[in-house]
Amino acid sequence: MRRLMLEFGIVAVAWLVGAALSVRFSVFALVPALLVLLVVVALSETSRGETIWWTAATMLLAAIFAQFGYFAGSALRFMNENRRGGRSRENTAVPSTSKLPVN
Image (tube, rainbow, N blue to C red; front, side, top):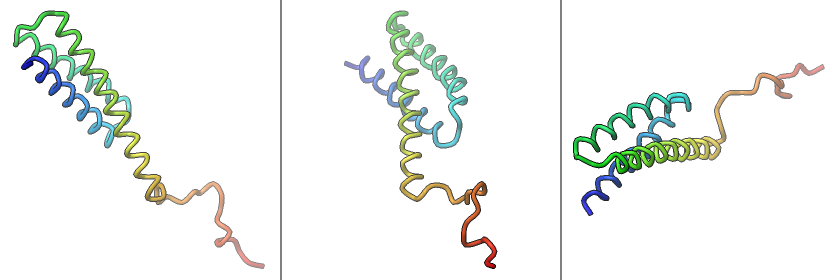
């Protein structure tokens, strides 16, 4: 039971790391973050004396849930921006009719 609680904690932290990365960084920041996360998980599992298969399964779950967290954070940010009406930038490609000169 204790083993599963620790694994759940690792997965939850991976989810939160992915969600936090999505707030500030592009998807390319996920690759180095995953590498750091996998090293931390591997060191944590081997220090507890887990088998190689259990360590590999935990590393796989941590990587998957970090990516799910990134996706969920990106989706929430996207929905929040759409709810507020998008970005405040004005589209410069098409001029507004209110700014056209009147003849």
